[in-house]
Length: 166
Image (cartoon, rainbow, N blue to C red):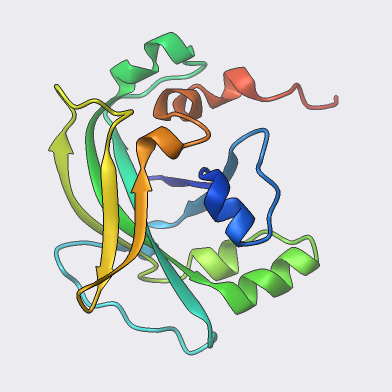
């Protein structure tokens, strides 16, 4: 299994963290060991004193493909769900300052709890509201209309990336 994540896909969140709004999706990954399912317990890692959490929309890719055109990308996912992205912000800040990848801050064991998936048939993917509550208080709200890059743009990503120097 591969877990690909898109960072900074909401302009307000990027600004909130002091980041520029990206012109292209910011992609990072999490290993299988990050995945928590079926209500497994999450434990705060001992290497960080600043763990943040965000609710994320998750799509399940249902078939293999390469060089998928954006107009056909909707054929490659059939289910959507919610997950949590845990981040060791103190570790991430140090890594970013050094120009290093974020993996140590994002991909630790248990950093990706995942809820149940539901079919997307008949769902308007551009009109989904979601939120996160903590002890009965709403701590995050989002809406797919606020996404910078749509699900289809993300799936067809190679089509949108500049050519790398040879």
